[in-house]
Length: 402
Length: 229
Image (cartoon, rainbow over all chains, first blue to last red; front, side):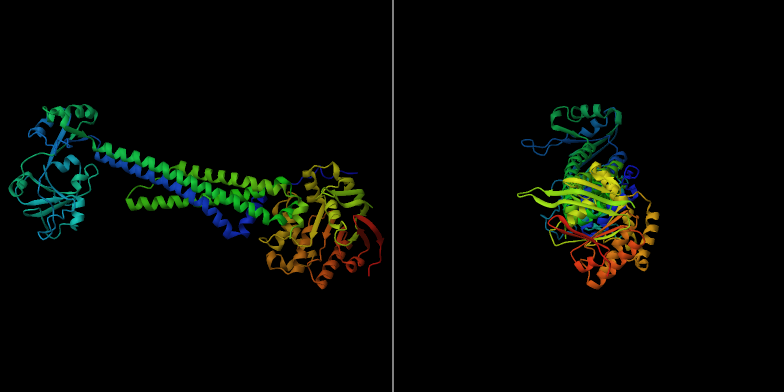
């Protein structure tokens, strides 16, 4: 008797394995697409969240680089019992005497003056805008840019001219100064000579109409009280400068001086974004999990529907392992398609949103690799049970179905 | 002449209360080159016999030798290999894969032998010609008529030149005329040397074949060589 079996085991080449795994997808396209969609949404969400947070972070870093982190903002403490605090008259002069300080600029507010498009607007409709008295070097201190026109300059200190912050200009509906424009600052018409770009470090100024000290005194009854002092200091000595600032500007009541570093706020915003990013990543993970359950569900149904095919394959010589590998492969393929789709979707969302924000598109490699790995892992886990079930189907039972 | 198949005292009992004795002691030998019909009413054990001959199921007791190998000694993987290389199946429900062409369905008969796709297709093309369907090679399985589907299934069963082809009610889903065509095809293939066992509940079909085995209640009650009509 010759033994024929030993010399020729059942074999399935890897390429044929892939073909066999793909057959379910080819014959049940809609179902496959829908079940891959769950994974796609999950991965897409995660890649988009990571991509967006990375892009926004890189934008913030370049923004911080451009703005510099060496600016301090000195204000009188306001609070219950203190009222709107004021800084002493000599505060600006004192501040500029601190060693590491490179440039000092002060602003004050004019109580009772508000910003209106014209004199017909009721007094109460201030639009949240204020009139701010600014030094000519404020633009330089804040490292701001002009969107149009020029900043207040010392050559024309006592003309009734004003420079609008970006928000102010937008709220008043003033886009440029091509056509001579005037605004009503409470008591007087002021000509608009410039519009500023958005200032990342001092949003207060964005919501103001700036006038020079001389003009404010001449036309708006400005009392000369300084509200805020902006100083740029040597970056290496910023902490020292920060520590001596309260006692310097207000030696009598140093505790009534508040020194802040606006770039800290931006960094804090980034930290808050990280918390949000983690939340969204968690949501993406939940979507991914639901997608995995969807794939498992579809695969279980597929195994039940395709008992005849399983029986046939066993009759053609497939081993239990070949059957298991085929269904596991199908699950991996579904998840893989979902993963690729998800990465593309996430990249697209990131690119779209980054473009709308003017950011550089940055999708971390870890998001792409991690996304694909997560998808395949989910596919493997989701496919494991259905594959084992398919492998366990007895060929005779499978062939009796119909 | 070599024996394609040899059964000795084969019993198959399905556990239950009471247990079902699907085969109650079957002795049967089939030589290479035979064309055999197995007939009997429903429940007589025909399908169980086919599954055991095809190594899809194991006997509870008794000896089963297929292509000269005692299958009791073989693991599940070895049985799969035996089926891949030495046994072809034809089913009543055809079991063609819907997403594949006729040619690829036939080529799947060699899928688990490890042969490369190109070679499988070349063999499949020959097999399709032998069943008279060369012109339908590229048609999808779903676009074929019932008779054509069964021809594809037959081509798939014989593409690997197996020692034994087992056909389970191959004409059961076909009208009588198409069924006779299929039977004629199997006779032709047998004349070319293929060993074929056809299971049927149709006595007139069985009467056409050179050897007829009748089953009842899990036993062979009649085994006669007849003169084909």
